Length: 566
View 1 (cartoon, rainbow, N blue to C red):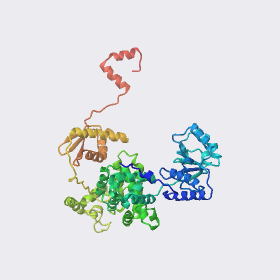
View 2: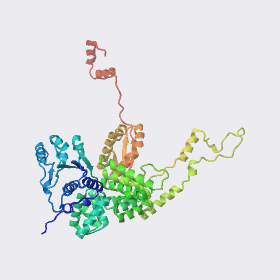
View 3: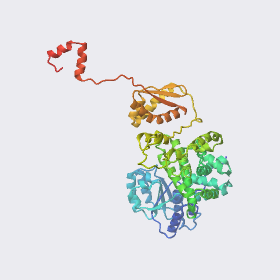
View 4: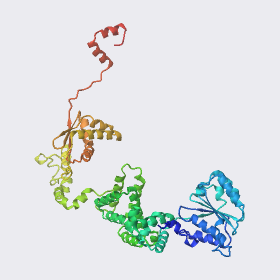
């Protein structure tokens, strides 16, 4: 079996031209070598896998090749010394290095010392290295590489020429992967390579490692489906489909689509972040001036441009804001799935024009979707007809007065009708205006439950009231044990009229709580009044003494003997 070499080693750059995404730095280094303007201490800093060590090795080789007659045939390996500061970070290691620096090279003009992960050196090791780094021999060049520049002491930074390596762009990484596919005779879809480049997050070494993994999974043919399945990433088609449902205000379908995403093993946090990025890309795609910021493949770019025409800028701005709020509150939320679902419902309600004045967190009511369902139409229509028969003019407008008559001639009223300005007439007018529309729960579930279950939830609701600080209502609810009667009727008794009135005010919230917990919307609560509770009196000290004296007359003799007040 032939020995396999990973792509990160096999395709490590050997020349500055092969380095991906660091054109500014490679051009600077080449120009410095050509013009003999190279500093003796260089610091390469940047994220992992962007070419710091590769550039250091290429630079070390190029320095000596410049003065060699037969550059390609010369072996300068003895002139390059690599030190891993992660494992050689003591003072003794640095002192050993400084002792070697004094010896001139046997071949070539320079000795190059590459110190990788230099931020791992101890404080004492840094101090021991200061003098050598400030005044090195003419034949010595130091190249320091690190991913964490902030951990290096300022006295070291001031002695180095610093080169900041940047993250490799998605398009640069994708094009380099495409070149490798051509060399390895691998056919790959453009979108598949783009997903690999995105997953690498700016590190070329990570991109090559992911590439090897996907090739091992799918062979010589890389498809977008194979890459998304192997890397377990959400395909952009998921976000395109979700956005179409959000724009169409289809809340039930949106919730089902989100459930499918969760069933695949993705977190809600990952999904909502991806959706916010998708909205951002749609916003970018709406203007030709910002189209360059859209780092996607050609096929995906066409889809973005198409969907961007459907989504308005106000919708995208509000959607990004709601997705961002969900992202900020996700970690602190105890019910994270509900938080994401609420955010999706609010986003789906942005473009809904069924309400003239919508609050900031408006959600399309469930009755809207019931009305659209063919199975529900026969149930809803009778309710609509019942409401339409009540005319507003009959409810609000007062009865028209009779024809005006001279006030002095006749002040009386026929048929003993009370004046509308009298208290009796005013009450009659109010009674005409009141119209009570009963809630229709015929189509809602009405599951059976036991009295024991009811009493358990009753205690739970009392505890919630105490926790919220509503102690007055909690004490009223806790005065009696509810009884379950036929037809899901709950009977509850209070001792006085005041508590009965207070209970009626808080009854709707209690009803909603019980209906949801018991999955029964046929529950009704009747509150009964029982004033036969024994009256308790507050006795004065004199009255208490008199009561005790009736039971024991000797107490009076005791009071007189000791001359007590009573």
